[in-house]
Length: 408
Image (cartoon, rainbow, N blue to C red; front, side, top):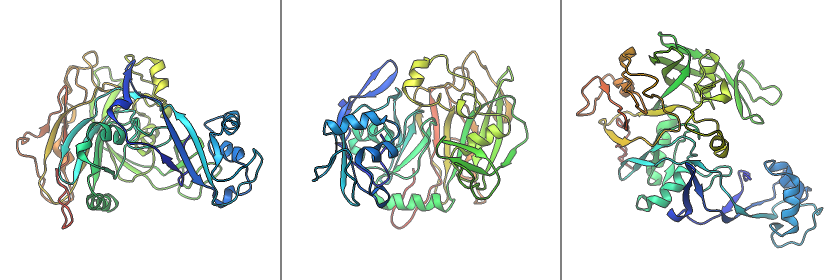
C-alpha cells in the first residue's frame, strides 16, 4: 500500500541484517510497520474501509475488511464501526507486517565522497528512496545500512527504478539547496546511453514532441500542447537530442546517446518509441529484447519491466575543475555488450569491448556553456574509457558557493 502524500510511516532505520539475497534477488526481512495520516476534507463522511479501498487499490476490499476486524486498521482514540463516517483531522492508522518487493541483487558502489556530496552508481530496478511498497530496499536505505559513516543523506534528484547510472546525494542541507538550485536553473546537464532497437540514423536527431501523462495507466504518450482529455494530463513541450554511438554488427540494435532538453516523465523512452527505435528491452514502450540470464519469474518478482539498458549517466556542472571517479559497475541486469554481440566498433569514436558492461563515450559529455572544456588530468585521450568492469563517472565542473564547496 502506498500512503497518500500526507501520510507518515513509523519505521526504524535500515540495518545490514535487514537484507538477504535469494535467487539473485535482494530481499528484506519482513517487519512490523505502521502508516498513519489525518483525514482530509475530501475524505470526510467516508468510513475507514471505503477510504482505504478507494485510495489504495493495490489491495482488495476484503483485505481492508479483515484488517479492520483484526484491529490493524483503526481510528486513533475513537471507537468506530465499519460504517462510522470519518471526520476531518481524525488520525487513521494501518498496521501491517511489511513484505517489500525485491530488487535485483547488485552491489551498490559508492564512487565518490566529499564533505558535501556522495556519488553512487545506482543499479537498475532499485528505487532511489522510499516510495510505494519500497521503504528499505532502496538506494537510500542500503546506504543507511551499509555506510552509516556518511551520515544522513539528502536525495536531490532521482533516476527511475529501471535505470542505472550516476546518482548524487547531498550530505547537508546547504549542499542540497545549492544542488537543487543548479538543477532548477538548468546548470546541470544529464546524458544517458541506451541500447535501442534497429539501426539508428547516423545524423543527430532532435525530437520535439509534446507529451502527456496518464496517471491511471502510468504511461506517457505523444500529444498536442494543450489541456488534457480523458485520463490524460495536459500536453507539455518536450525535447530530446539523440546521437548514434554505435550499431551492433547484426544491425538489430544501436547504442544511442540521449540528452533530454526538458524533463518530462518517461521522456527519453517515449521519444525513442516515437522515432521508431524504442529501448531494446523496454516492453512498456515497444521494446522486446529480454535478458535470457534473468528468469521470467525473477522479472515478475521485482515488479518492474526488464531493466532499461541505460547503463551510464554523465552529469556536467559549471565553474570548477573537472574530476573523474573510477568504480566497479554493479553487475548489470541487462548487459549492453556481450562477446556474442560485438567485438568492436568505431562508429562515432566508440569502441565496444567484448563482454563490456558499458560502452566508451567521448569527452563531449564534459562540454558546458563556457567556452573552454576542462578535461580531467590523466584523461587527455579524446575518449574516456569505460572498460569491462569500470565506469568513469564524470562529476566534475561542479558549482561552488560561499555556503558549500560541492565538487568531486
